[in-house]
Length: 168
Image (cartoon, rainbow, N blue to C red):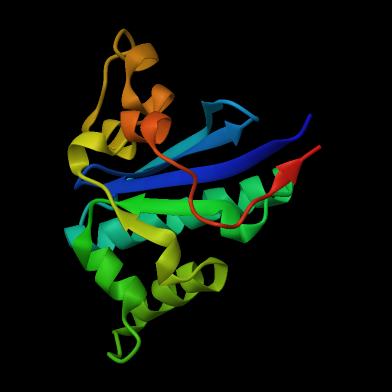
């Protein structure tokens, strides 16, 4: 029996932290399962960064996590989907014509070296699991949180396209 897999990576930032979290979605013949893969949060720099720049750093953290997952699980790049609640970051990543300041340009270039704009989607903050790490959550709430369980749309949604990767 073979399974098809997708990896879904979410990013978020606040003045306090930047975070990214990844989930694996495994499809069998008649069902699919979601599982927490990994997550990472970092304290945001104390000064000098705007929220859009922090969101861009969180998106780069998401790509760093994806690169690690790809290396460890040998999942093809086209099986990754990334999510952010920052429309500014989506604009940075999809922009083909505007030149950015070096800080932004370097991070966008690094993100695009792993995936193109087609791999990025907007997610509402209320459905973004990475939001848990940037806003805080008690240890009591964590087991039932989006950070561990992922958003409900992953359980209900379809796969990420025509591409398929099969684990034997």
